[in-house]
Image: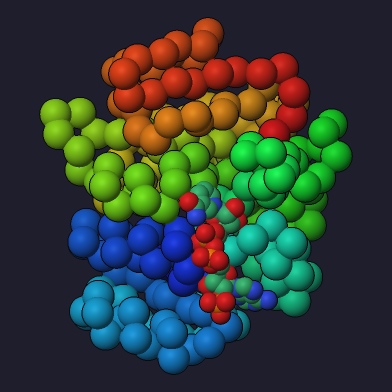
Length: 222
Ligand SMILES: NC(=O)c1ccc[n+]([C@@H]2O[C@H](COP(=O)([O-])OP(=O)(O)OC[C@H]3O[C@@H](n4cnc5c(N)ncnc54)[C@H](OP(=O)(O)O)[C@@H]3O)[C@@H](O)[C@H]2O)c1
């Protein structure tokens, strides 16, 4: 399967580094193609730079490492080209609230994943993934010994689940499925208040704290 990363900012560039370091061949694209070419030159033969349109056309898996509102625009622009693709959304529809915390940029009772999934073409397979750690933790947590750090993901599609789990492993993390997008996100959300946790110490049933992580489940959409 060919994977494209669209958007080479903090998250996109770090994902590109982690995936190529793990041996994955990837297509990388940014609205500024020279930015993609510069990164490809750093990453070596595993990364190929191209336009956003060409990357979407060639890829089986498209990771949109861009902001929520930009993703809505790009999905509209490339709607038919995305038919039949696995579309990975790492975005968090949040912004600083001016009080040192974050607030949702969409209504509290709406799920950003469901909003994006609803915009996709028939046959596109939506996955919410790769956005549960900061870009910095994606860099420092890669291949962490003795246990790999976890990246959570949610999707309703078995093939997409396998493809994204494989990419997470290749990128140096441990994949943990939280189920499908619809039923899971309606019931709960996972908020990461610290950076990196491991699969063996993670429990989905209740909030848990340790020296390096805290996971809380809330009964609201995220
Ligand atoms: N940063 C984190 O720690 C983190 C953690 C979890 C999830 N996320 C999510 O990951 C996504 C990316 O965050 P980031 O921190 O990587 O952002 P970023 O560093 O600002 O990068 C955003 C990327 O989107 C591109 N872009 C902006 N407007 C565009 C447009 N109209 N058309 C095409 N491309 C456009 C930018 O291109 P230019 O370079 O040309 O401006 C850049 O490549 C966001 O949805 C964020 O919520 C981020």
